Image 1: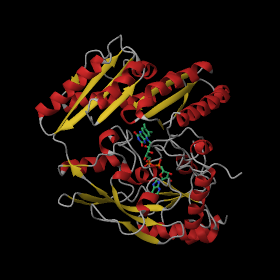
Image 2 (image 1 turned 90 degrees about the vertical axis):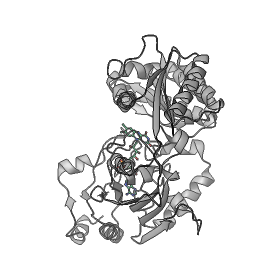
Image 3 (image 1 turned 180 degrees about the vertical axis):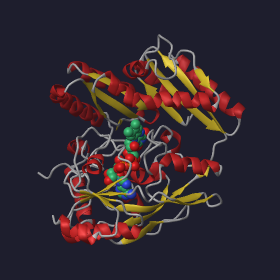
Image 4 (image 1 turned 45 degrees about the vertical axis):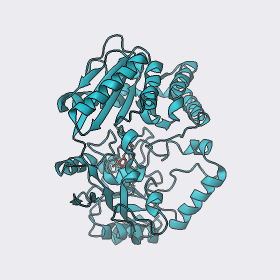
Length: 456
Ligand SMILES: Cc1cc2nc3c(=O)[nH]c(=O)nc-3n(C[C@H](O)[C@H](O)[C@H](O)COP(=O)(O)OP(=O)(O)OC[C@H]3O[C@@H](n4cnc5c(N)ncnc54)[C@H](O)[C@@H]3O)c2cc1C
């Protein structure tokens, strides 16, 4: 690795190699540890990104794209050192086109800012990871991020039409389309969305938009028991309702947020947050009442309905508190994002709790139960508990796959889950993906060491 020669080649670009900046870019939200880059580069346009990538190829220096570092699988961590390429300076909303129902942004645009800009134009961009106030559009593309509204509206990849993309070898490509439909050539947008920063760098993103739903109402439905709550989720969907969100919070997670957000009834051992959107107040209210009566037949207590924006925001703020609040319950945690077929959610929750009990660990489960995507958290108090935690995580992943599920629904594999990939995917499938990686990145310098298990 010839860093000095590389630095000389990058003259004129914004660079930082002070300890504080390197430490900042060596850490994300994955709890995978710290991996410091030698240098952080802040390109301002696609041409500068190309310069960085070409120089890294010339000098055989690994590079890792990085944005807001909210990732939960360690995707932005430069585990082999080298350069971190921050896309944060490329943060311009290029166009919102109401008539075409499309928008084009640079990758460093903060999702929450984009959502607000789109809503001001009467439009809606549904992907809504709970990190929206700080995560970026580029990070969302790379992880194919989802969120509570994926139940009705799908995930990031369902909205990406076109990409401007710097390949790992430095070429700049325009992929996909600027129109709502278009099937020319292979679906390379589909390959690059979710590629976790290993197949190149997004420098411009075109997404589709939809009309903004006029009315949104949210209900909090308490249950005494988490399994009854999980069964109620299925009862709602089987009854033919398609809420925008059906979130579940279990007893451990409820305990963690107690006294911090909206108050829950004392007898609550779990809650569902259900949200319905539509065109008229009457229609949405009627659907929400129907949902409340279905959940009551499944053991739900009286639903509390939030009708205005403030009440809704307080409910969602409480939901967003769950992850940090769990960390206050015990000092450390691993947060998984497995998905099981919807019909298996109650069984999965039961099995995960049993795994925790058998190893003397607390397991909390919350998340997007409506689409089977559960954030199962293994909590622990000290690093000496790590061997038991590793056993619990492996058992949890095996159980997920046995139930017909997947090891990650939205956070990506990164380094956090690469050792579990072979539980879910065959050696042939992993080998095919490795071949694609090497075809596009022959020098293997673009975010190396991510996604795939170590070579045998
Ligand atoms: C409290 C909290 C709640 C969260 N909730 C959700 C949730 O509900 N749903 C969900 O899906 N995720 C969630 N996340 C995870 C995280 O926010 C998402 O994965 C997000 O998409 C990461 O975006 P980022 O800008 O922080 O990217 P980073 O973490 O900086 O990077 C993530 C990956 O993207 C790559 N990357 C970044 N920019 C580019 C680019 N321009 N081109 C190519 N690759 C790039 C990096 O190399 C890395 O592999 C949550 C995280 C936190 C901390």
